[in-house]
Image (cartoon, rainbow, N blue to C red; front, side):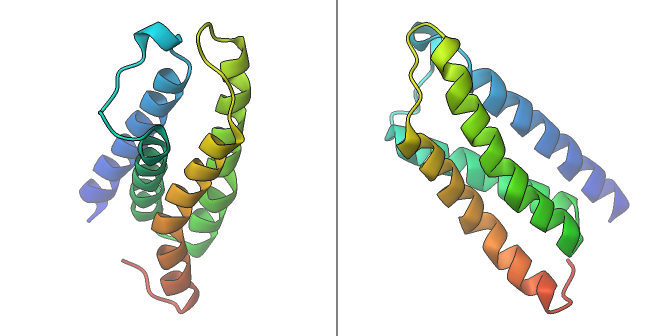
Amino acid sequence: MLHFRTVLKCTFAAGTIAVIVLSLLPGKDMPSLGLSDKLEHMLAYALLGLTGGLAFPTLRAAAVLFMLLPLLGIALEIGQLLVPGRSAEIADALADCAGMAIALVPILITRSFGFRP
């Protein structure tokens, strides 16, 4: 199980770096999955929440992720104001929060009852 957690931690770190890099690319260089922009935000942050929640198995760690992932989304939206061809949108930050919550709320609930994967 220790090896699996190490893989999850590396996946979480790589995912976080990917979200940061993709969020700060100039508009003309942005790849698209062909999905709605908001859905892409939700998926990215749901995956970050899920991998982070599984990689760090305590209630406290999940609570910290629940606070920090929205701050990352907000910081990146503000950072986009400095990137050519990008703009900051409150709706994108809300989509980030929704995606993170979809993944982390069930983890927080189960851990608050003492269950740890």
